[in-house]
Image (cartoon, rainbow, N blue to C red):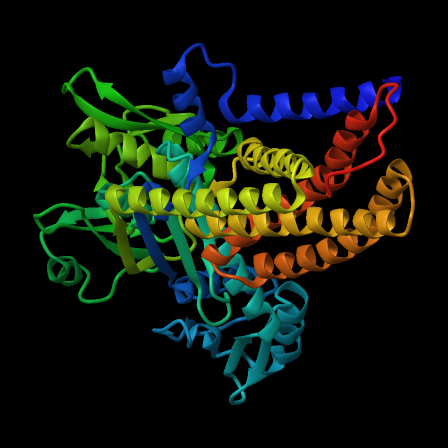
Length: 536
């Protein structure tokens, strides 16, 4: 046996060992072998059981927030540019479809300042169109391209935030992905294998977790009417009413602009309050925010600071002394509640609220049935194929069987190495891969048979058969891989599972059917004996 053949055999053994290590590691006993296999091979929702949620992103909330921010910035810019106005207000798009119809109406802009106002909007706010509705009134609308971009960014940001929250819960096998187009169906699909009670997760995902710290002007009041009556129905400029959190109604009058927001947080953790023996959520501010917060608290000692979470006042403590980079949120009934709040604060606030369109739970018994039926179908197909190959090609059928088994090992190992999830459609892809792998061996064997019938010697027939079949195999596999790639790009989650295993199986088959199979033939013909026949 020459040196090059030894190198080829060693490379095949090396690939096999690496793949087996990726699947089961180095087990010390049978139990550890099974444990490693279950750990490395991630099963999908349809096999392992678990929960599936479909969320709809209320993108109109992001459009409203965008308009509100623009109004605040526009007022500041106009004051700097010495452009007077009476009011700025926006409309109230109530549905996802109407989100792009957001409008800002400005009134009372002097005619003499028309050119300055238009120039200011075009230079500072290029995403908005401005049109005149009368001599002193204007309407601003978001440009179509900017509106589409805002929709996409809102959905993408929501997915990133939800992924961060799910990762914080330790659900490493969960998947979060967009379902439908952001322009028409801003929906998010969440699959959580092994989770059979998603109530807590739903609560965490649905919490906007928008944290804001405001200076308290007045309050608390027992009702909104009481607050309005104190100011004769007209609230002071630069303030806004916010309701308190809790069963008992309370209202606070806060400064309109927050001192600190959730974007300024660097970290958040749950901790135990030593004084009250309860649980609180502590937060740490970024360096820039800590400076601003320190200056504010130093200048407002003995005044109240409202901690607002998702639009409601969680607490309104009195500032006792200068606070630089940290604070705490009280009111958590349990450690889990404090942990959950810390988690959503670390992950960041959602750019828009979400509602649940669908919730589905798959029991582990159904998943076990799917695994059992999938394995049975795969084994039956494998046994049938091996039987036919051994009967038809006799000893050479062993060659095809070895290549087939190695193909399956490589496929499963790649799934394990890349953390891919195996689903029921994925098992269907494996079964189809078995058929295509056998087809490649049949193609090669028939080519060799033709060469033998043409009078060529065994060695020459094998070399010529593999060479002539190689281009055909590459052609068919490239076509199948491209088709599977399109299935992966445009297909649903289940279709993607099928496409992934099929693509991996096809790529592995090029190695096993062409390289491994030929090496087996070369090993069979090695030595001093002259091979005159081949069992094909």
